[in-house]
Length: 66
Image (cartoon, rainbow, N blue to C red; front, side):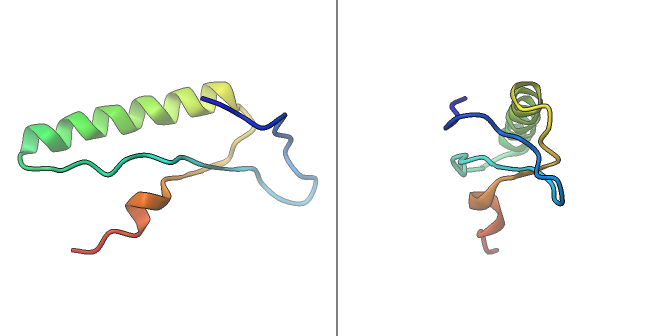
């Protein structure tokens, strides 16, 4: 995971991380289970790399329509 310098929590705010993550093609329950594991792994690694982060957002997932 890359960074452009240090990430320091603002005095009057919170630190947010935006994760650019590809939206997969899901065709089965197994695909969903696989993606859940990958997203959880990504959350853990992001939090480990940036312990001050309080909100982790996956923008590509928030723009999908049913």
